[in-house]
Length: 269
Image: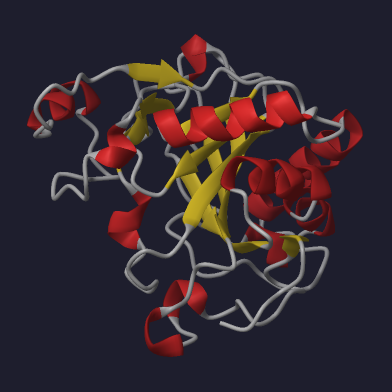
């Protein structure tokens, strides 16, 4: 159990930096291994629940040298759902946010192959909020990025720009940009701000948490092994869809069997 001082420090660092690295594993190794098997089954088009993922930009049979990004993989694998709904993720998310309720409202499977010169595996610097217009302004939204492989510097780790969650929403945010090095120079920084990147170096089962306005991106995986992770997008009780509509990214939020509550209990929204 995290002591009070450590809990306060984690929250303070998240609020200051716009991200927090939980470098000690939150997910047990046996569950990580089962989730890896589930990830590989989903990529092959095998769904032990009988239900496919949501429509995705990468589908079974697509180019294996490209970034594999699949939506709502927990629909298709019991092991992945167990990982996504693990209470340790909810407890850590509540500690850094101070929330009374944490729900996983959308999940993405991310499999970055070792590039060996291939293109299309970089992730441009972006703010998640740019793509989350279904949520009301000021909604408390953030992401837990859970590593399933050993993510070192040569794996193309996610890189957070420290303090960028305080710079406002940028019109230069672009997940799909491949020229990550050149993209860095396109952002307008507030007076006195510095561009400082922090790589998310994580062992299997560890996780990072980042604010919806924190700039982040990643370069090529040159490790010779795939970089495996799940991006678990979270909301607190202080997040509501625009007009109360259940559509797009908010379409499943009333179904805890699809979008599990990780901490507290689901509240009206």
